[in-house]
Length: 464
Image 1 (cartoon, rainbow, N blue to C red):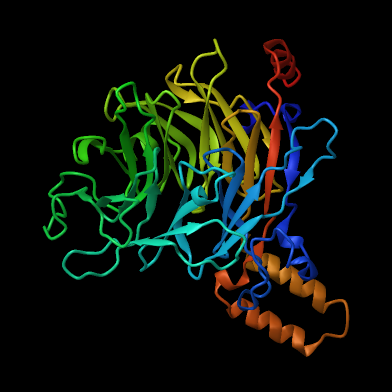
Image 2: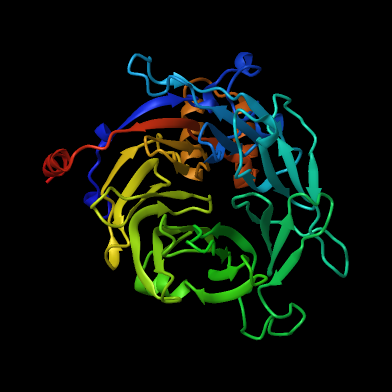
């Protein structure tokens, strides 16, 4: 139903640059290719796919993270928007970091400048390791420049930082873990956090907080744009479907509010959901957007009324467990509200306009196909508003009926090979994750053409 309400307007975007499908690149090009990883023999030739993408603070570089634990930095071509350039331009990484283990989250420095190498920093969080700071260099396997341990007070075992934010000016960063928020000083390498904020009173109590606070693993953090007095709240979301607002500016991480989104998501908006994957503030800092996995929409809250649902963005298909991140951008002058850009599990990118201007369900204004039936995990609008970056990639799991049809077609063509039957039997005995296959995966940059209102009405009229 939501698809019928969307007006595809591919003429409003044009593919300006792309890595191409990295899952199809041959092995001879691996030394200079933009592939997230070479083939892994343990995974039957599967390649890593792009999971996340984000712009650096200066807007010159795109940082990506792939399922093969590879961080890459793609510098935007200087002639990206040149009318004489042959599009799409080829994107290749200028720097990579091969992590030894999977990372829960990466975040770039808020003072990142392409012209100043010392500013090209990023924070990485991996399981059972301190939070690590890397420099984005040409070396593929650099060592961490700094480490920031987050441990349990009693046992001194490492706590995994499952979410990170590094707000401007960059002197401190905040990490989220299970039932805990921690504030670090970036200059105090090797030291524990300056401040620990428990999201529930006690983990040792039988009722795990006695119904007070917000229990669960902090899966996402977002810093509110500061106001005229430099005040800013941090919005935390959990896998247990709770949202909390915390003030780290001057009151020591005081909890301003907590609420559950379960009823609003499943009963009022009826978009489903199974754990928060993203909280993101509107450009004005008045509205808070909450996105979940296994959901068909995004919740919109007006933080001036705690826990009160303003509306929801319908038609954002995120039906799997894979994290899908959206982005926001100020609305056009005089139009009211702001814009939300998000990918979907079916390869489309959808745009909602005038968000925050009315209550209830909000349908997409327009969309376009950014990938071939592959999940668009990240959609990032450039600060200038002239281009948008998308990364796609996922695995698919063939069902038994599909594999049976394939085996019949192979076995029926000749006098049957005994090896064919044995391979079929082995395939059926394998766990589903061992039979997964690559779907299209690429990093793309799209130029945006903001048409006039008259052109927009003509486009919408053509789809009536």
